[in-house]
Length: 310
Image 1 (cartoon, helix red, strand yellow):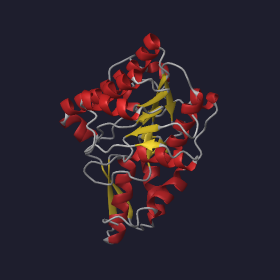
Image 2 (image 1 turned 120 degrees about the vertical axis):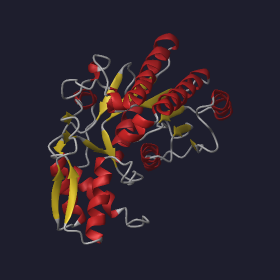
Image 3 (image 1 turned 180 degrees about the vertical axis):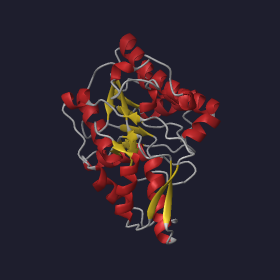
Image 4 (image 1 turned 135 degrees about the vertical axis):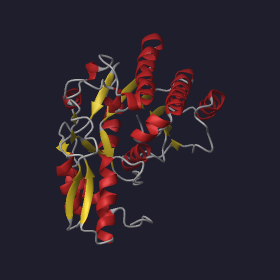
């Protein structure tokens, strides 16, 4: 990559895409091409092909996707598989047709089998059944990985795939109905502090462990891999460390400055006991996460002060 190359970040307004743009701008890149979803429907093949033929990007970061929590994944199963398959198929095929120098496809850790050993290694892909609630989304993401590999094998395209762990950071979703655990806890503790509530209720025991990566670290890893990695298959991106949800809750409570109690609704399920990425492949390539979890949460919380609900 050089500073004159034209870069297309698909999904540039989302949490991941916006972080990639921030990283590239910080590194001195300014020749971007963007389209919002209202300007370009990535599910429409003819429109995507016309866009690529007109703009001719040199590098593509494929961060556009239909995403949601467990409820949305399970409810809108047809939309999650159709929209994501169409988005990635249209962009990957158009990138090949228009001789894109390199493409980076972003997947999700939900591609791994539900009962896979921990930590999750790249070669566990397709070795067991998926978690049923988000299977349509996971299958679409697996198809994206395999499509990148197929275009590499048949046409020699330098298309690579990365699988991030649970992410948090600027432009996250804080809706209590649809958000993931870390932003949901930030919102819960903030609301409890604001309303002077005596307790915050958590689902389950809080014992399951999860790994969390700041989206700015993800963007840094994507930039590093776009410059240095040229292999088939996929690369996990994570911290290689996990934390029990109850410890995460205490950490967020401390950052927010909430002084009440944490209580547990034990009638609610805990979910998967552990979900941790094996990041040895990435570390061997020369990259490690830098942002410590508490520091990252603190910076995210400080950045929320302009939000309407804050």
